[in-house]
Image (cartoon, rainbow, N blue to C red; front, side):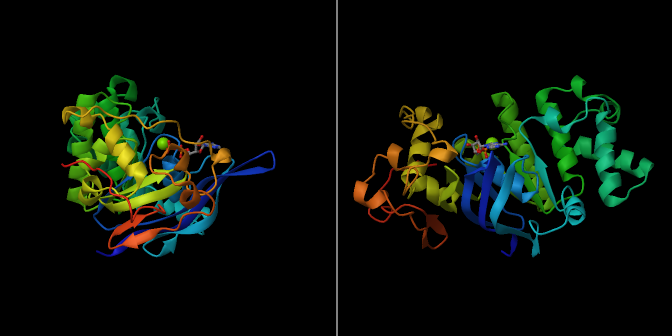
Amino acid sequence: MSTLLEVEGLSIAARAGGVTVPLVREVSFRLAAGEAAGLVGESGSGKSMTALALLGLLPRGVTVTAGSVRLDGTDLLAADARTLAGIRGRRIAMVFQDPMAGLNPAIPVGEQVAEVLRRHLGLARGPAARRAVELLGAVGIKEPARRAAEYPHTFSGGMRQRVMIAMAVACEPAVLIADEPTTALDVTVQARILDLLVRMQEELGMALLLVTHDLGVVAGTCHRLAVMYAGCLVEEGEVDAVFDAPRHPYTAALLAAAPENAMRGRPPEAIPGTVPAPGALPSGCPFSPRCAHTRPEVCDGTPVEVQVTGSRRVRCARSRELTLAGVRR
Ligand SMILES: Nc1ncnc2c1ncn2[C@@H]1O[C@H](COP(=O)(O)OP(=O)(O)O)[C@@H](O)[C@H]1O
Ligand SMILES: [Mg+2]
């Protein structure tokens, strides 16, 4: 598969009061056309910052300090504002956790979807409105012609997320980034939204980057996953292979902590401690203070290099000597 999105050595930092705090460090990954990949890690790992950087949407005070993001060979980080505005929403689009944040409460939802089509594809008012109704129907909104005229507050959380997905896929982007798209929704609604994302991804041949703290979400949705911890990518590989035999102790700990474990007769095991604050990272492996396999002389000190075996990449100095328990799927 050919590479569509290529992230190389992406580093992100927050600057406040003359102090620079690294939030994301040398993250590299690739996304092929039509592929679904997960970006997983506990809250505070740097997943959202990574995702936002891809679209040039980092919050004020947070900047990219190194690296490149190439989409079809165009470096998005070097692109001027106008080029980026043309790419964002059209070639690469994003769905956020809180659908209300992306919707204007004062405009009927149909008009909001139509606006995307007018702006990016130059559709006239009539055709854009008709296409918006089709899109609302395609994302599973019943009676789309009637609902298109209604305002966001009349929609449930799940239905609002469907509207957001309709807006994101309106221009059939090559890449869709979904950042915790189901985290704010009821469990029963979560599964339906994930099904919708996968169906859209397959029908439109989009690449999907699904950002989530929930490995269960990745298991049913993605081909490949990347695991992030304290701003670093610690493991990357095929979903089946990683679940079966994780090579990084953090991945193994996440799998053991997943609530799905309870259904296999094993109680979920919480990971001790918390993700370190970006300004207070330990030297060497950032996971070492919480890791059950830490060897002081091996894991402290110098930063750990990424080890590559086939399609697997692991950032653990001990990964070759460890045999970690996985989860059979
Ligand atoms: N606007 C901001 N300014 C400074 N630091 C931030 C900002 N937003 C988030 N952070 C910090 O960046 C780190 C990564 O956050 P984030 O990417 O949101 O993590 P995740 O999405 O994995 O939960 C966290 O430590 C968070 O506190
Ligand atoms: Mg996040």
